[in-house]
Length: 392
Length: 98
Image (cartoon, rainbow over all chains, first blue to last red; front, side):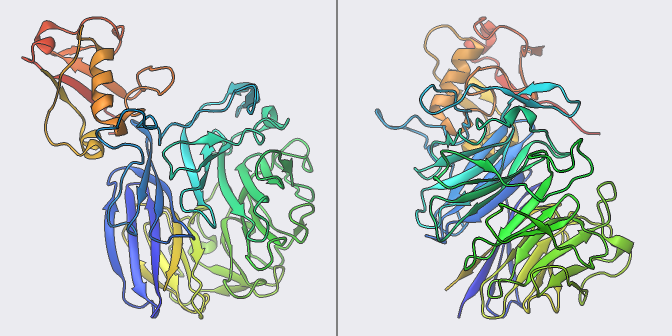
């Protein structure tokens, strides 16, 4: 029987939740890396037992962790105690250096700070890890201050894909409230040269040449909080999702507005429809129904909790515009948690499972595409990210 | 033999318990101690000082012999008591929170 493994990153460590295909009984392991912020952990589609985790601390900086056994044991790649002569320099797995080389990099310029002044680029942390669809040793990392890095040696060393940061609009990028983070990386399963990324608060970008060059894909977005609401960049994109069978169709939860593009991001249209509020962070797509999407509406950009204290997932079966509230099993009074941008995922079992985590430490699961919900755990530290692996 | 006391999170990361003991060639300074520490425990690279600039991370402090050495030049000799192993070199995470 198939089973699922839910990878949960929190403010104070990582947890792994496992269940069989029924998804009723759960085994909880962790905390791993107790006391550290785990912004994201994710498994390789090419080798599900290969996991990567971003471990960070305000004191000690960035650590990259890797597991080869589905999370039972972890190592810092390249951090072996006795590196052999001639080997790759050790201790490089947490070394993210912006590329300034004349051959591949761009001059390290500045980006816009909160107050409109220019500010130097400074690496702070890895927000998102996106393993290659085909190679367990290749992973993309989205970092703050916004840039994309890639490893091809299992996270021992990282190199920036500098064409993104250097394509011209970089000095206009500005941080969102949580920082200038590159938080979304989507790999097109039908085209290995195409990658989508999103940055708060610069917007969405696409490469069609495997990361050498990038273009902003923000046409159709409208953001009242920037001087030119229709600007080429500057939009606070919170999350983008796609269905693997239809990778040209993108769904976006923007700061405000739920959006859809049918042409790989070249043009967006709003599909917020009858949502009670279209602010939010997460968005995801049903594993088997490309037009069924899920969001968790949040009251506003200053009140980061559900409207009326009712935790409701909204589902559209029409690719947007028409939404229904899913409430069964979710708290419908006095609920004032948030659901952060990385904290929703779906499994690919026949009856699609949907999962999300809250800043209150709950991880909720639905084994029937959102009709019924139950908490797997209730009292973890604030949840930063949720990923799901469907295992044979 | 130089004795180094790491904060709990870095002990966990390096998979050590208690004090670390290091042989340091030449002058015993912050830089030479940290170089020896990172050479033996590469996973600690970048956690106490920046990979490129080698500057101390803002929330990491260095103490020895009841003195705050955080702002001493990295190539200044550490106290004799550290060099002889009588006293440990302390790596401390700055106190934060209430």
